[in-house]
Image (cartoon, rainbow over all chains, first blue to last red; front, side, top):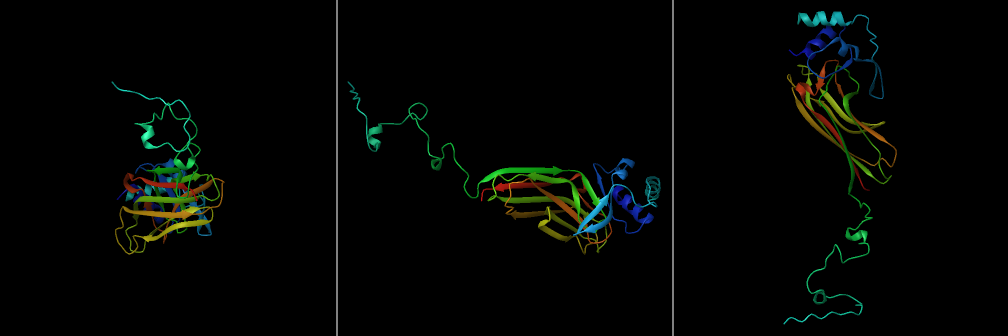
Length: 71
Length: 182
């Protein structure tokens, strides 16, 4: 399983169906990548409205990393 | 003994091949401006000529669980048409399209400019359990009637809140725009 697969599985464990976009230059996912995630907050004309300010208090980098390490 | 006859009076009318007696030195013996219609300087573009080409490519991996369209990172180009009559031809090639291993996931891609959807592919990989590293090429032909800068970008989404990826495994995706004289 790739780190990207692990990352999204970890996200969905913490919050099912959360909508987010991650951009990475390699397979290794770091806290820096986590901080640049575009989180969906809504939709307008079929286009996601996003923010890089994490609106989900139940999703933090330490929790995501911990879940990834279990996979 | 060879005899050379030199005519010193000006010629008028059309010069015949016989009068040329060989070839003309185009570098030193021709003056004036070749008409544009004959390929000379000052030539203006005719319909169908490619006036400019701009391309962007990226190896950045974009992964999203969004069910509404999001931009594919770095798959964006700007072009400023030189005339309102120009057409814009867009070619977007997306590689490494990978959906979650579920038959209900499917990646949708599109070319987007302002509020205009120019080309779209829906639910790539839908119905397969292992949609891994697919490729898609989308094209669009636009008549923007504008000389302002236009931004064309690639966008993607999943049909459900599960992860889909483009540029999986260090692939390269690209978007190319051409201004075509209209």
